[in-house]
Length: 178
Ligand code: HEC
Image (cartoon, rainbow, N blue to C red; front, top):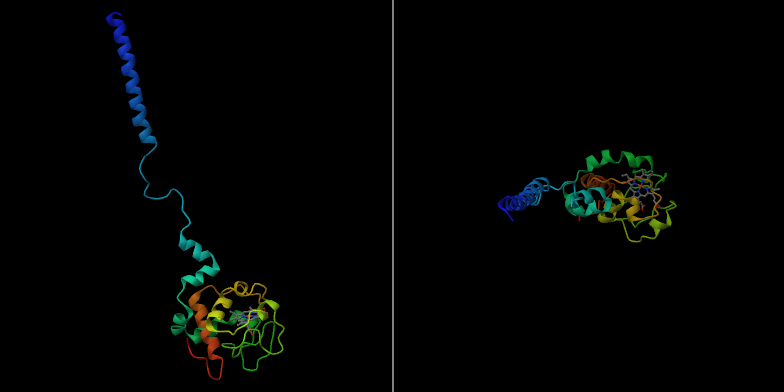
């Protein structure tokens, strides 16, 4: 092997080494290692899920007792406008599409005289305590899946507390706060 041949081989080896090194540097530039600070796409966070799932939102809100302590019955009176399409709130008020709601707090569930309740609500048992009202007004179908109450629900926890504070005031002797 003369020196010219040797130089060719050495050159080829060196060239290959350089090429491989170059590839490494190049690919490092293209495929960035290390953990990115931000995800490339938004991962569904727990917060987003609770905001979209009606039932879970209640779990995130303070308990109804706590919200009622800060609730405003006057504000609630303004918030029941959508309810008046179906309910009468006056004492001795007639049943309309829905049962009369005067004195509903602490009243046995599905017990207003002369109203034909759904089997679903009749089957619930118990009375309308604050927690039951909170759940029903937030998601009627979540509380009683076959309810006839065609109302989507009030999802805002503090507005619900205002509504319930107003319902509580509709009685000769309002039920004690929890
Ligand atoms: C589209 C008509 C409609 C609207 C709007 C509506 N309701 Fe009702 N509501 C009903 C019907 C019908 C029932 C009876 C449900 C059943 O039998 O399943 C009912 C039942 C109830 C009950 C149970 C009463 C009982 O005697 O057991 C409560 C409490 C109640 N509604 C509160 C409200 C409140 C508060 C609102 C407004 C935020 C509201 N409803 C909006 C139709 C309506």
